[in-house]
Length: 210
Image (tube, rainbow, N blue to C red; front, side, top):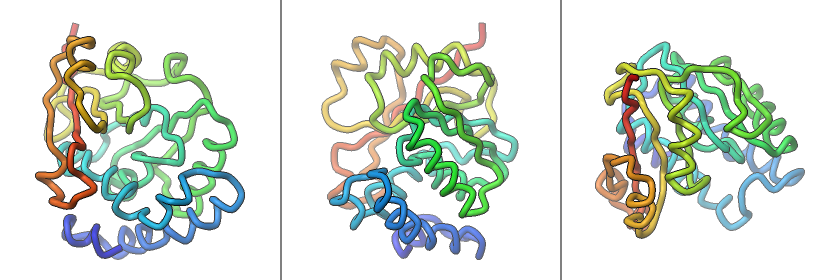
């Protein structure tokens, strides 16, 4: 995947091989279950993989970091992040059984030993605590923070303080006002100056220890 190599230097041969394996794997699984839209499948690297990796560009998870992907859907952002950070552990959660089982099989086919899957509603998850929760356009910011705040641990396991990270797009002023969680907002277009990433943002809400 050429775009990933452009923005993320120093990938190991194993990481390169796993990123290259993503498109054929998703094309195969999409014939059985609509994990991602057929329109986006032709833009998998940019719209799904590179977009997911914006989290890694900001957070740079250290080895041993525990991350929960809330509502992973087809495995994003969790699968690309697990490839980029093999020393971190990722729990991919989704309430749709067929999807999360497929994601588990994709992770297994990629040899990702740092991925576990969980089928159920995020607000009912019993594992944790986690250093970070991550998500991509799953729910309003207020809901995401409500689900995250009780399962996060304080501290700093990465380049930024432990907390919630979510990928969102469009005008977010209303969501931010409603949440009152005061996120740091990063423009993804400044990381990847490509048209697709205009008006796409990464939001980080640090966890405040009790």
